[in-house]
Length: 458
Image (cartoon, rainbow, N blue to C red; front, top):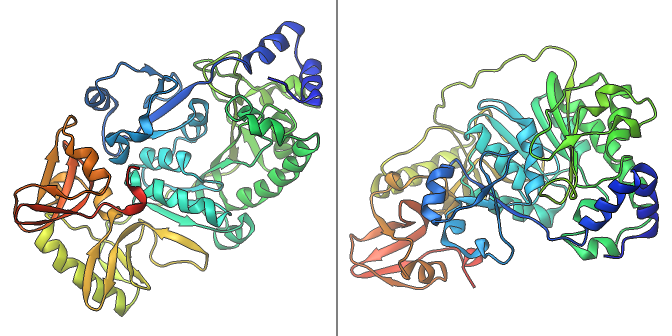
């Protein structure tokens, strides 16, 4: 690969001659592919049995596995069931380092397309509040789809600037993930266009933006709270030197991460102060480990962290119209479902939502999804959403069609075709074995396909 000359010169000056040769050679070597099992729906052992595969574990994520180039994991029915997320292996480390717990308030500030958000949600077991934001209206659409596919119900998906969120959530979050926009040097091997778009001044521009975003993130973090800063670039200006800037300017200290699986300590020798705590982050290099490259550092805001308990949910409504929509949903659920969960219900236009835990109302921000999108309420009638089904389990439904993993009707269903199956009339949940895929409507021997058009296999 032809790398930019100024990029080569920079790392020749930072590394020994032998290491630089290894580093440069790695850009012409094969890239690594990974997937992360969605533990909200299936355990890693159950997943391997279902797929009938022997996959190599990713050492830094218990739910992660490498897979080979050319394997079509994005087209497998198990992907459509939300059983796993396809993700570059080193990109799984930031959420793993943040390690949120159920019942906490967590922010993923630069979240699209949703790999890290869905990993955080699995850690939280759909308990507590996960605010997940992206400033791009286009990218936030992909974030919503992945949140729905993975079955997350504790997320508030917003489309705001960090500065606006800072006004709404001052010192609010227990943990914040800050995977900032960066110069993307770790994408060179994965995306050759990233090399073409790279400029001499790109890193300087990114540093200014990263520091601006960090200021807002710090203002939203509780005293005693934890923030993970990460990039997919190698440049020390965006990594160790930024951390040096943050700990000198803000009331923070580095919470040392233990090297594992090929991740190495960050390099304090590349900073002005050479403070030993600046070696407490982690770097993944493509010449040392199986990944494209990532920098991760965990920071703690000084102070004590107050604990907030999550009250048992009770059903109430943000408006009279929301209560009317809920009553229609309740009638639908009594006919078609075996369970129904309490919570705060909110109606936006014709769309009914059950808000995430710890949210009693919608704050004044631009948002795309609040908790569980339950379905549509129009003219007194309720129509269930795909999101409602994906956040449930097969036993939650009165009518279920289970198709084995070798059943050719699986692909036909995912392509939107009508199936011919006998069953009781009404809404029916279609499954890959016991794992939910989508809705259908049973009428005599015909199963009318309700799988969303935008989700269908091509």
